Image (cartoon, rainbow, N blue to C red; front, side, top):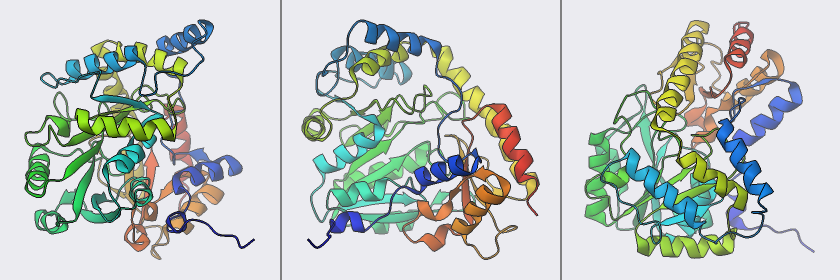
Amino acid sequence: MIPRISSKVASFTESVIREMTREADAHGAVNLSQGLPDFPCPPELKRAVADAVNADLNQYPTTFGEAALREAIAVKTEAAYPGWKVDAETELCVTCGATEAMVATMLALLEPGDEVIMFEPRYENYGPDAIFAGAKPVFVPLHRPEWTIDEAELRAAFTDRTRAIVVNTPHNPTGKVFSAEELALIAELCQRHDVLCFTDEIYEHIHFLGEGGHIPPATVPGLEDRTVTINSLSKTYAVTGWRVGWTIAPAWATKAIRTVHDFLTVGAPTPLQAAGVTAMQLPRGYYTELAEHYRRLRDLLCPALADIGFELRVPDGAYYVLCGTGKFDPAKDDVAFARKLITEIGVATVPGSSFYAEPAKGGDLVRFAFPKREETLRAAIERLGTLG
């Protein structure tokens, strides 16, 4: 037999982010690569999972999400963003994490040959997701140092083949939070070209701009009926391993997403969906403290990185900081530099090239993640201080 794999799979590599975690584990490095907290989730969620398992909620759920969780998501969404009405019966699909939500959305709503606009740097899954659907990613740069959009470049990216644009706000890996003006521009272009907006908002409550700092694209005039909002329990509740996510979309789109989801994974874990109801019912103060918690961690790590010699823009949201490495890596070999940090310094990062279709564009960047205990960050800072 001649070994043969799909040309789609051959067009990209395994996740660099997950690889860096494996390397960190192998070398005993402090893991500031993958965005996984090293502190516990809220105790209410632990009790809810235990109660669900003890109640024998261990069988297949309703394919597109248990009714109690869908209703809780709708109620919580409306409470967080007054005026945004979500129909739990027709506009919600519970998935196996935001990762499945995005790929199910693309498989459901894209045709082979469609173009999907993505801002770069971008989370590494989006490109492969589009390729799985037979679509073509079209990349529009975010420009340093403020990670701004060039309006002319964005306008030029829209063609008669454009079917969707991916928005990630707050943004991984830059920490950018898209402004009202930027979202209004995206809305104008989506209406003009009849384009869908796929928006990844898993960091919705992790931003440092105060009340109203995060604007869900689905609430922007002109995007209400053409947006698929993707979210999950993972980041907000420090349960990245639970893999419970969801989409909110117009009923016609939700029906298609549910169909793909049904044949892709059948359903998200039943007892964890039950715990998700508890998560949705946490008081408003939880989210205020969450943002303050991550602000403290950001303000511990970022000044220290700057003092050590990394170039950075302090992030407005999410829990990553993308840093220039010019002082330490004039060759701009981000992969070699990241491996050196693991093997010689004992700190794991993500090489910047993994966030670009053309690796050289990220050759002088690495990403640090700060969803860690203070003592973890202090240990990493101490080790990084030995960089010469």
